[in-house]
Image (cartoon, rainbow, N blue to C red):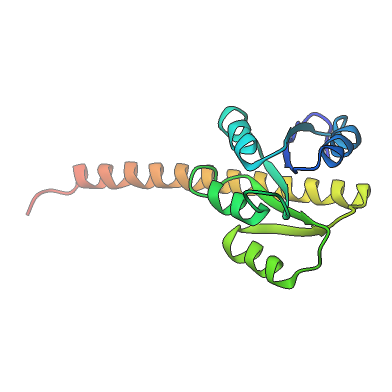
Length: 156
């Protein structure tokens, strides 16, 4: 991954030591934003251009899946990663179906593995963004061609 690209990563976890460990590990590689709750996480999403959202599954009040599902209507672009210390297959299925999760990673995470997954998630984010922009340009060009065609076609 080129160092000139800055990746904005939001990590939501109710355990402060996990947030601190994540920030200490990845702050030199990514722009790290941390939040202790879904509410704090949403506030960060509203003020920052976040590309990757990582959340713990087991949190009080709002689970990671509930948080990810709740942000989809307002913030559909960020790629979502779910972390959990529990191998709960139903949570995994829920995460994929409801929270549109790109990756499910078990705690404790391996730094190198998590770094690679964040970079891969950013590649997907970038490709989706580029694809969206190309589609919009194609639609504009198509509309322009249609209007030119209408001008050239005599009324019958």
